Length: 211
Image (cartoon, rainbow, N blue to C red; front, side, top):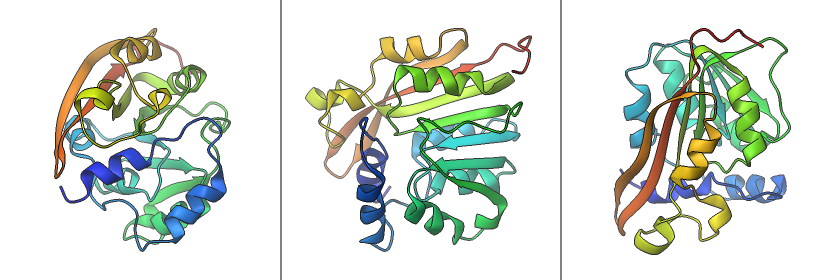
């Protein structure tokens, strides 16, 4: 996919990265990332039955818009107003709930839960994952796709800051209390070579009561 290796590392943010920098990045080009969803994200989510979805760190909205086209009721959160405005203007943008806020401090309407929480190429601290999993409805899925730590040594592209990169141990810890359906590496072809990602699909047990 054209530009896949570029679009997939840009969404990851280290702690403290400011809004102004991302607003500037989105404003300086017609579009920063591809319109199409990441290949792994699409492959994981395509078989799922649509419900209520939360896209954290939505950027220009490629995953949120794709989910909405497939029948999901989508809430998309990103702290860049420029990115969210661009997403809102895309075809189908009026079918998504767009929220400009920092995913590290934002929280849903009290009592609202989600059948899907998507964390695609976004850095979350452990507390961020704890908050995200607490918003899952019974049977809901946490889906994480991001660069593997091993990519720094053996892959191409992506951030060079190890704080932004995933290991299986870290994603397993992020899924504490959930049933892990998938956890492992995904090798992604780019024009510069193979990029090494990690994917996690973990589901809330069906007997859980909504918070």
